[in-house]
Length: 200
Image (cartoon, rainbow, N blue to C red; front, side):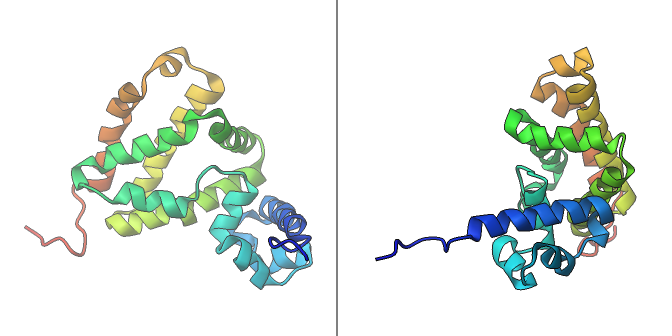
């Protein structure tokens, strides 16, 4: 009797899809790459991509070996007291970099983005669609504010983890939060009017 479990070839098919996704995202950017196009490159039906990964966002995260799906991270940042959202955002960002296995894909993307315009475009489009637009919409803030937070934190990651600026390398998580959280808090809350908030 055949042993129950995955059908033969499923693992190989999944890897072929991921390979095709990496090529498409690299060549066409996050916006330009389509699920249908990736499926065609992999020689499978688009429905199979949805079966394996659910969404284009999750497919991107898997193909880039990202340790977290932004679709799961964003709600955790948004939930909770409003006056602590800046701290939650910064601690979530730092958490992605703590473990070496989680840090590696982000380091690779940042290093590549500084020298490769295609990678930079792909990373920028993904951050805009999967993270920034969702946070901006949920908070009712202009996208430029959320983009400003992202620029500050990516800059911090570049100096701490890639360039290795000694004071930032030596700083504890609490020290980093004390520096970055108030700025994130300001951009996400100060002077922002949301549709569900009555005007004074």
